[in-house]
Length: 112
Length: 110
Image 1 (tube, chains in turn orange, cyan):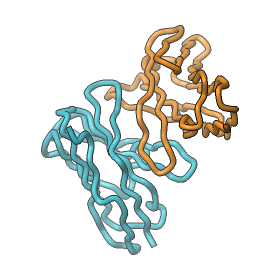
Image 2 (cartoon, rainbow over the protein chains, first blue to last red):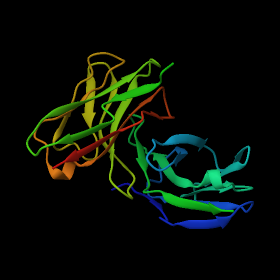
Image 3 (tube, rainbow over the protein chains, first blue to last red):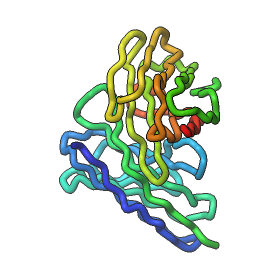
């Protein structure tokens, strides 16, 4: 069973701090990694994707990938209360057909 | 572009009833997916399609059926509703890697 694991949280950070969200995956052949944000009662929206080892930055968001350790993370700098949501890690497995395996998500709470 | 649209937004079914959840995308994506999300859980893949006329089972297909007669539409059919099918259902489409989600259908089976 291919799995994606995340700490369910809640992760509570003060406004302006860096939030660090982590994800591990079991399928060593995975090639593509995604972070989705899901507000309560809403659908997931893509915020970052990463394919290569290392860091990828987009505004206040940085995705980090370490394939040797099977680990992907998302850093949110200068966290805002509007960042409070559940963050879903998704991994495209080696099985083809563009299928994603989702983690259960980490709930982030940014308090003023 | 409307993106991915789903109807209905909410539905209450009685045990044993049937219904079809509609999903339409206007982005000409080949890949389409149906997921369910239970409270506090991630998304579980029910069925997916790689193009018109081609569908396959995902992780949790029991109790559901799909069809894909056109690129745009990917309806999900529940034949004999059971309380275990109470969930939020999301449809998604993809041109390749990234998946784009519809607003979801909240289904309750009583």
